[in-house]
Image 1 (tube, rainbow, N blue to C red):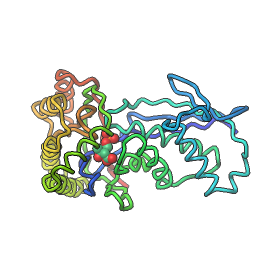
Image 2 (cartoon, rainbow, N blue to C red):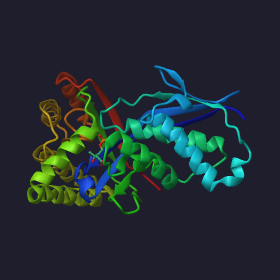
Image 3 (cartoon, helix red, strand yellow):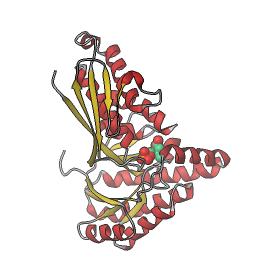
Length: 322
Ligand code: PMV
């Protein structure tokens, strides 16, 4: 067998983070400008993992190693659900090498992308062509290790590699975004593990459930209206979408997951002409996004850089035809 190379995109949450953990809808889209790649090379003996930092045997990996967990999950799953294929290679021997351009702990789904790429590479090695929901379910197990009590939105959007409307506990709805949205993604450069902010929000919610439930419901309302706009083609609706992003940011501030650095970038983007801007993902650091137009993309990028963004990515969401 020859080399197998699989990539999985980064992702960004347009609306609904945190509230999604409590049953509200959220909408996330892939960001293909950044991605993780797993390259599987069949070898002579044993299973090995290789990152930029180290090379180690699967058998020596600690229990909390999500890369090793991804390999094992995919191997076990394929052995159980694709038994005919299992007989083709009873003694697997390969090296999986990981590369990723997705910054860690910044809300761009780096963990989900790396694990998705591994699962797909190992499944391909096992001659199993897994459906997106099968990959997503396996990667959800590693998300639990990384994020504590994740909603499942990251593994879903990365495994489906298309925009998704996500409500915890319901099958994800791949979404056709018809509205062309030009987004700039500004990185505070601050590492902020999602696990921590999710845990803090849970603690705050358990102290004041009534207040937090109202905030989460308000986020849900924003997400529903945003979806309606995204499914239409009328560009006159973009300013309203911008307002909804602004509103979502204010709600996230009240939920307690913004930071001075995020507020600063959001403010800079709006001042430079963005239609709207918000933090994205776990918060307290990581990335924010700004909705721009062809006219404002340049000035907003400059404003973000001047305000201290460590890097600014650009992505366009939406299809012109199906
Ligand atoms: O992985 P991040 O940082 O984009 O955040 C995930 C979104 C949260 O709603 C904060 C957590 C979750 O599991 O949905």
